[in-house]
Image (cartoon, rainbow, N blue to C red; front, side, top):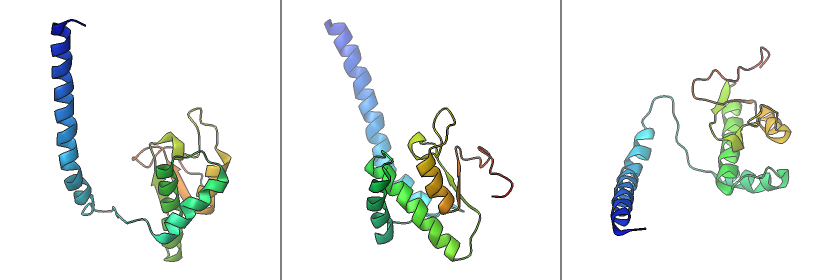
Length: 137
């Protein structure tokens, strides 16, 4: 690489680093602002969620620890909500690892069973339209 290419590359990397650092500086404020969004509840992982996360390892879901914690939080929180009288529960998920179907729309039986037993319908977007739940859901 000649010196001209090196200088251009360093400028691009410096800009990218500044953008990342700016985003990181705003991250805490962005996360704090979520607490005040209507219809959105931010909650910490409870002991029950952490225990469920550990327990999910026997399901052989091949999830990263963070994804396992998210799944555990969804399952435990949905149980809590159902116990308090809520019945129309949904999880919107863009991450293929946590969807109960793969990229070819084939079911992932273990994930489907976990969501179904928690009575949580999983949407693949945030419009709450896809996939559509069955009529008897």
